[in-house]
Image (cartoon, rainbow, N blue to C red; front, side, top):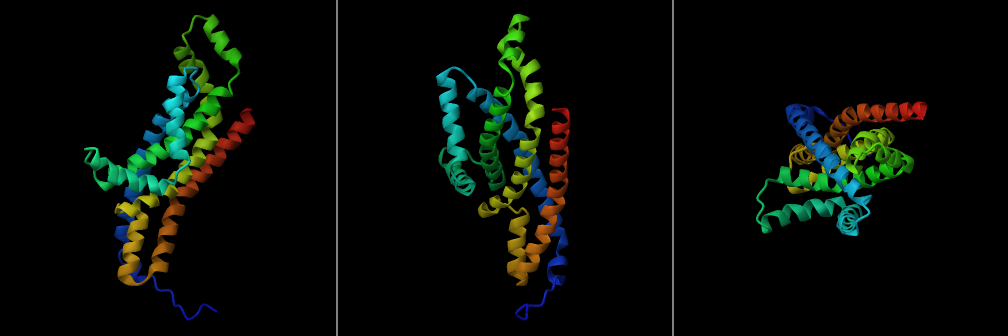
Length: 222
């Protein structure tokens, strides 16, 4: 029934340190890209809510560009484009930049939705108390909006973990890249992919559990 294929993980597991090193690099990419994309996404989301067209327009163009084109194309394009414009970075940094800009575009929409979901009366009450709009946004609006945005932000974090595998196309030695290399050298591609699957599950199961917890907490507090 299995076509005569015999599973043999010995050759792959013998090089387990490479998987752990790749997992640490994957976590590093995830951490940096998460922080960068959230910061960029926050400012972009605020820009999308601006009443000034010259602020909202360029931000909208950026968000649509990165939301409506494939992430893989963005990774490869940024990798080759940066040296052309005089910015010399290695493949790892290039991949992180691409992931950050892509996910920031999606986070921008989430932040925009969260901010606009807050009743306008909150703004008016803040102004009546003498607050500037920037102060009201920081002290009144964002604290409420962020609670509503936690579940979708968490879901995006799980997706980002999986999409770190795409930077393997520019030579970053993360989990997927190591899997391909070991699979080719040991002729055990399937076993190598299954081992990598376990590593991704070990990262994403806790993240998914956290997302579910935040969603339930939001429902209870709603």
